[in-house]
Amino acid sequence: MTKSEKNGKNMLQTKSALSVEEELWCAVLEQAFKDARRYPGLQKRKDRLPDGSARDSLLNELNECRHARAWLIARDQDFIDVCILAGCDPDAVSEEIERQFGGSY
Image (cartoon, rainbow, N blue to C red; front, side, top):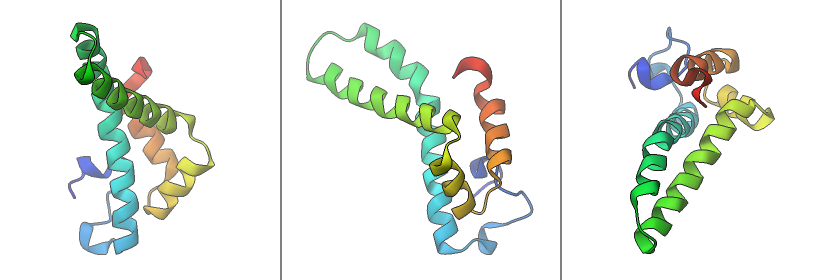
């Protein structure tokens, strides 16, 4: 796991210092960031696709990305719990969200 992949992870910790459980929850955070970053591109593709199964599939992906973005910015108890289980400071993760997405989310 690189520093950029940690998305708010305490940069003093290395992959070898993480427990298997922390790695799992880090992966949850990483996937949420990846999905959230995909949203704008998927939105543009949606507008170009005609109706049909490909568009329906894209709409499902878009919905998942929308949920990821909402979860990241909501900073609810679930988000805080995942950050803690990942060994991350929720405030540091929130700062990373702001850094990566700014006001665009």
